[in-house]
Amino acid sequence: MTARSSSSPRKLQYPIDDHDWISKLPDELLQMILSKLSTEEAVKTSVLSSRWVDLWKWRSHLVLDMNRVLETTPDEHVYQVSVQLARSMTKAIENHRGHLESCIIHHNVSQCKDGTLQSWIDTATRLKHTKHLTLTAHIPGYIRWYKGASLLRLLPYTFSHHSLTSLSLCGFSLLYPHAFGNCGNLKTIKLLNMVISQASVLTEVLAACSSLEVIVLQVDFLTRLGVLKIENNNLKFLQVTFSNEIDRFEVYATSLDVLDIKFIKGKRENIILVAPNIQVNKNAWVSDHGVHNPHLFYNVSSYLAQEEKNIWRELLVNDFHDMKRYGSLSVSVDITDPKEVEILKETLLMWGTNQMTELEILFKNKKAPREEGECSTNDRTQAKPFPNAAFRVSNVRLYNFDGSNEEEFAFASRLVI
Image 1 (spheres, rainbow, N blue to C red):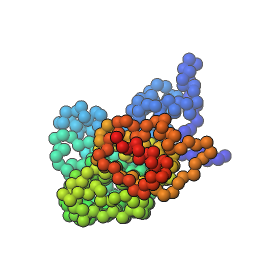
Image 2 (cartoon, rainbow, N blue to C red; image 1 turned 90 degrees about the vertical axis):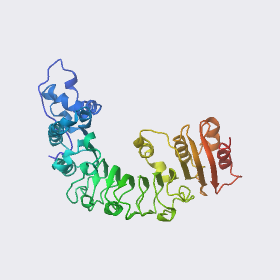
Image 3 (spheres, helix red, strand yellow; image 1 turned 60 degrees about the vertical axis):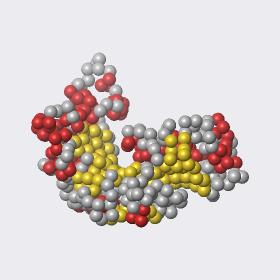
Image 4 (cartoon, rainbow, N blue to C red; image 1 turned 120 degrees about the vertical axis):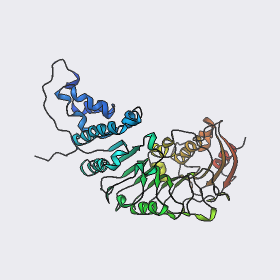
């Protein structure tokens, strides 16, 4: 007899009413039905009959959210209600069986202080082998001004389990980097609406996560003193939002293809970028006054063309509530490669009806081989205007432009109004 995987649901026999046709469906179909429900709704199905008691426990995704209740709870009752909800959430995650693809936990700040959050993380990673973990702290209005309220109090190496590849933290304060020790397992990290004691702490966190390919930072620092240094040759995507200034910001990333500057402060000489794939004007976004315009650098590569497009759209757009972009764009693209052209088109459409401040385009020298029967870029753009009629840009800079190249000339002509 072969051993059964711990992540596979057991085939249990339950007495089923002859008229209960739904309960007679195979486990796989019932699991598919439950996957369309929220975690809360799926758990409630356990009361339908003995057939349904354990079905929800084999979900591959859990969302444990107390914020929806706390948002309508009077401030004076928030703590008591959060404790009750935390017990239910603990029971749900402990009753779950098998492994988890993703786990999302929205909780109250009180769980940061009493050890509950640590327990949830340990269960999700070490017992459930969760791949993608998201933690969000809800801060009641009456203590929202106090930045220490959501202090992340965790044990060393908390996020170092080999199964965990993606981590998203939102609404926390971080004083020390210990919880991120030996986190070479992480490929993606998102630190959103975070308060960090100083830049050197974030430098240590990112250095301990040596395998990161995606970094999203939306952080404040308690002091401007210190240097934020990101040195990672695996890094492909970096998105940055700093609302206050730090002494220096350095990036050394030989594989970086996307640099998305949302908001940043700092003098020109205090911002260092060493990224060979970012070949356009690297200082285009840096002003002499220390406050810089949003700027997206995009090296459209074969790697990005092969990746699932929704991953990059999520990182560039969806995390900011599908708001239209503004600011400038610098892009390197092979205009003869259909896949790269399609990514470029989607990128330009992110601005919608907003006028782009500046567009820099570096035409790559390489020419993609065209498959038999495949139409040229020029043919496709005749059928569908590219960019579309709503696209507006104030200034355009073209590098490596070859006026005799049909595709490059056709594209450039569509930027002229």
